[in-house]
Amino acid sequence: MGDEFYQQMDGSPGGSGLAVFSTGMKVSVPLTFVPKDLGFWTAYAGVKYYHLDNQGLLDGNKVLTPNEHREDLVQFHGGISIFF
Image 1 (cartoon, rainbow, N blue to C red):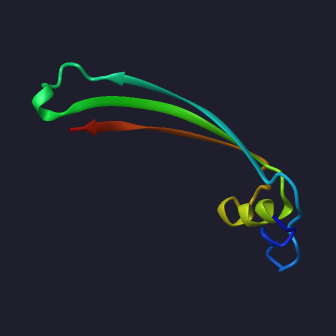
Image 2 (tube, rainbow, N blue to C red):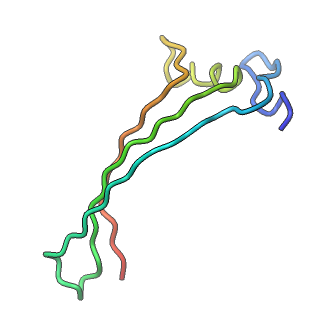
């Protein structure tokens, strides 16, 4: 991608090269106490790590976190999946 794909807030180019690195882990546990005629239920929890290495992304991240300029973000998530 070109250096103008992620622009800074003032419209200048954000930079080129690797913009985002992400990795994560997720753990799933089947909920075997739920009867199979109601589907297959699974509870899950996970964590994701993002490293932002692009000035345009970092500039845009100020909208979400106006008091800090964070390159490293961590996201926790969880929920229930149902398959029929």
